[in-house]
Every structure is written in structure tokens, then in C-alpha cells.
Image 1 (spheres, rainbow, N blue to C red):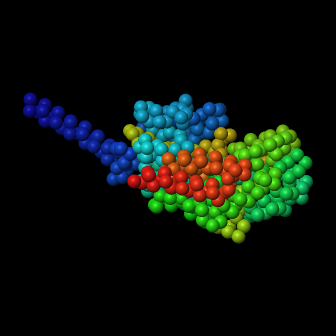
Image 2 (tube, rainbow, N blue to C red):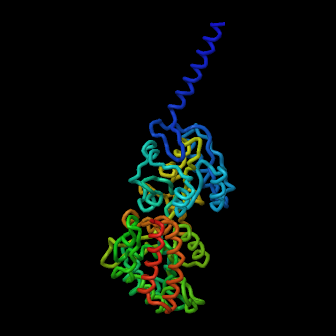
Length: 448
């Protein structure tokens, strides 16, 4: 009887030892906090909740998973493609969301702080040897919150301009539309030249965050118009309104449709320049091709005399890791695979992909339509999408840089105030002062 007991105890001890060793070989997560004393071991099963509304989007996700499994063959990825971002809050609450789930960068604060649903990936950035210096910093910053990393971008979308090259050539404006051009050149030289014969110069949406946020940096410096420590914004410094005033003057001259106010003057006319991002440029390009119009892309103009203050609004969508995941090692490895050359090439090399987030892939052929020589797409200025990205790309969404309530208030009221200004019902200086007061009062209330 004693021998049986001894053997049983020995067997139990061996079992506990095996499980103990297994536990030491993987990290644990509790309430979103990773136990960094453990060595990551990516294996087992995870679920990926991703929005794939088209075959192209599904192909991009599948290619990414396949490439991931080459690097991490011990991980099985369950594809949850019947997911929409709008479902996220409910699925977070029910715990039914994937270990890794698709999200917009504007939801980082909401999901990380409000819902407390995201895991900090800082430890895994080091553990999986992710080269942070290779990631475009404007887009990487969108995932940083309270000294943590809660979001991984899958693509890079920097505001650019796509334009009717035939009209620019016909109006002898080609010499002005070159890398390094400025807002002064665009507004004073190009706009008057290309307007006419059924065309107006440009379509620029002044109510859209990634468009107007960079304009606030033109005189005061990038990101200098807000202070997250003091909890305030500054829209009334001398010069802040200078570039916006120039755009409104161009609107009144019939050159630029700002998407606000009385737009009847632009009826039955077409824009020569359209501010957009990569995927929209592709769509516009197909329209131009169908009409046998030559077209190209150019970066957003720089600030005359203050080039260092130039800014391009950038954005993305990407993924976060659910902080209640039972497999943090595999989930983190999967999410951060978007920050590797293999992951970026796999995902953005498909028709459902966009511009890679890594500077090391800036010359890669797969996103620049290198094979499309028949339509001349291989000769287009795709580099406009990453022009001096590490110098000038800034977070474009207010929700990524201000508390959610402040951002929502400012975004909603900005459009209303700018519409009044464009309609001549309100002076720009007064509008900016009102917006500053409204946002600061909201922010100070939150800080109490």
C-alpha cells in the first residue's frame, strides 16, 4: 500500500513538474498586464477578428496569415471574417472578440482606456525584436498611449494630391507641380493657371481632420497647437490662421472647393487636384484611365519659409490584442507581424492592401504597380505617398491626440464654425477663439 502511495505521489510530482516547466516557457497576462519575467513562446490557437467585405480584403488577410505561419508554424489562426468594427464594443463586453482584432487608430483610446480591452505590446516589441526605427513614426505614434503600445498599424495612408496631368500640362503649370512645391506656389501660381475651361483648381475638405490638423501646424510648428500635460489647445497664436485664410481666399476666388458653404460656383466643373490617400488615388486613376486622361500624384504642398513646420496628415487601420486573451505570446506575435517586412509584403502586396508602414520597403515594387506598364501606372509618382514621411507625417485624427470627449467636440464644432466662416457669417479669428475656448473648457472639466 505504501509503495502505491509513493508511486502515486511521484507520478503527481512529475506531472506538476512538467506543467510547471511549460508554464515557465510562456508569458501570462492578467488584466492586460504581461508578466515579462517569462520567455515568449508563440504556439497554440488564436482567433483573428477582421473585416473582409470584399474578396480583395480577404485575400490580403489570408496572405498575411499564410506568411505568419511560415515564421510561426506552431500557431493556428482561426479566421473570424464576419466581423465589423461597429461590433467591437459589444463583442469586447461579451468576450467573444478575437485574440487579435481589427480596429481604426482613432479607437485606440476608446478601446484601451474606456473599455480597458487592449494589451500593452511594449514588452513584445523587444521580445520579438521589432525594429521600431523602421516604422514611419507618424503612424507608430498613433498606437502609443500612457507610455504603452496598444495598436499596430497594418498600412500607411498619408494625405496626397492626385491630379489631372493633361490639364496641368495644357495650362503650362507643369514646372510648378514638382517635389518640394509649397502652398504659396500652389495657391498663387498653380490655382489661377489651371482654373477655367470647365475646371477649378482643387478639392480640399477643410472639415476633415487629416486635412485641417496639419494646417494648424503651419505657423506654430508640428503638434505645437496642443498641450496634453496642461490640457489645452492653442488656436489663437499669431499666424495660426494664416494658411487657412489663404485657402478661404482661394475658395472665394473660385479656385478651391473646401467642401463647405455655398458650393454652387463649382457646379458642372471638375477639380484638377483632389486631396486623397493611396487607395482613393488608385480609384481616381481608374476613372481617369477610362476617360483617357493622363494623371499623376504629388505630395501636399510645404509651408513657404517654414518648411520644418510642414505636416501631412496620416492615418491607418490596424489591430489590437484583446487583454483577456489566453494566448498572449501568439496573439502579440501575430499582431506585431504587421511590423515585419514579411508581414507587410504579404498583406500590402495584395489588391486589398495599401502602402507599407516600413521605410525599408519604400522602394518595393509590390505597392507601386511596377508590373502595370500597359496603363503607365509603373511610371506614376507613387513615392508621393511616402514623401519625407518621417519628417512631415503627423497623426491626422483628433481622437488619437486629444481625449475622446475633447476630440469629438472639436471635430463637430470645427465643421460648423468653418462653414460659417466660408459663408461669410463669421470671422476666422473669432471662430478659432470660440473653438479654443470650447475645447479647453471641456478638457479642464475632464481633468478635475
